[in-house]
Image 1: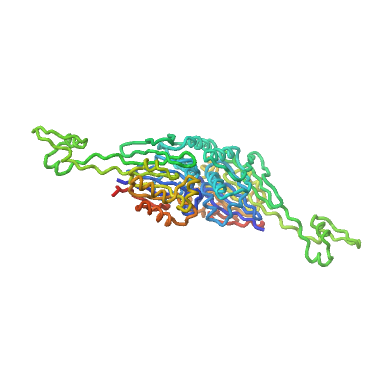
Image 2: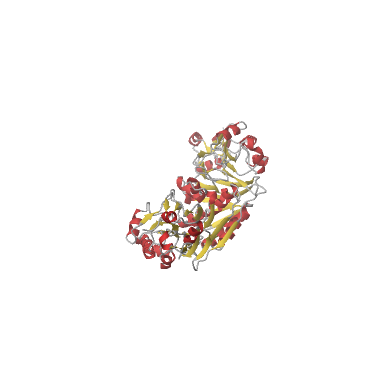
Length: 307
Length: 307
């Protein structure tokens, strides 16, 4: 089943041609979550192969413009394209008022409902859950209240081994019982043990998004063990003071968080406009956490199980 | 002296790759006026050769998103780039509140002052004037209150013919008097007549921007005789009903306004996403007004005197 992160923008506060402000779409089993929505996100979506009308969840980490100025245009475009599907928007308390102030100014009659949910910047919280996926927010540490987001597949049921089905001519009710983790006592008095008859299911995969944040060890706790972590790395270590002052991270700090959290892979983003490419930042992060890559606009990353 | 219109975006409500929402910079003798500021304008500015920090006037025609959603990002970028120069912003009454609501949410400390001026949707009004240029707004007819904008060079002084300066050994005070339109009586009793000694100055050039508007004859009155008119032509005539219903114009209607107003040249824009190119719309407008061209993103048009 698909679990992919599509990077639409991974620049910092100053957008540049070819480096959009922050936005990414996470596809978990064909459910699409837009994480942040910087200016121009709707254009980046059109450049991508993402079916943008299928985005049903928008998560806004915080109200710095490079993370949400594209929201109003996207909501308007959804309307112009005739959307009727409900949309869930998660973000800081002021977000709903801003959306409504624009809609009042535009005299918009929106053809689809938006369910706004305020994120919690004090503690992790489940925002949405269904049979496929859980969406959580978790606090990060930035100049204004900010959260990261975490997407996890739901645990899968164990699978019953085919040869056991054949060998014991298992019936459907027996298979279902085994999938629930039960041992089955048959009419002849024999027992089919769950531990023998079933495969362990693959562990659920998980992805965490932590932007923008300064180096903060609680982030490592929140993203503990995820398969893929996107962590901001606005600066290199030679600009550590500026990183601290502006509540951003260096690449080395992003690597340290990844190492502490024991994640599978680290992708760094939110690269300052002062860096033409991200090579030196990747090298720096790798001194702390080897399995690091850099985001770039258009990159699609598959979330794989940790080795 | 330079008088140029730089088209940054000329699409309609749905932005497409390669067709940004409305924005243009008018350079009048190195003074730069940004007319409308759709989403992505700051990126279009970076793609252009325009020195964006030299934009001191931003005019917003109305509060449909495709005409102003890029304003917040641009104002933020000005701040991040260390702007201290004052900025004038002209637009509908709700605009200042929206800017301030975003700044409050962002906790922005802006390093430059903005002077907001509310536009008048009932009658033409001078918004700004100096020795070089006059900026006016004028009402147009759209679904929500909207104005167009008109930029005129200030009248130039007449020039004294070089051969007259030489022939009569004119002194500076005499030249200045002639430039003021006076005849000069010399100490020997002879007269140097203004009409003989001076060139008529070139007529001041003018540019009008009329988007978004339905066909409305008062627009022709407001832009009477301008050298260059940008008029919206969202649809072709086969969609006239839709144009009327949505308070937009057809290309033929744009041509009729240009003909009525006796302008020098017409440039049509705000092209609906349903048209891949603008060829058929230009052909249609030319049936009413021959000297018509289509806008496209990146086009730079010199404002020339009418023939």
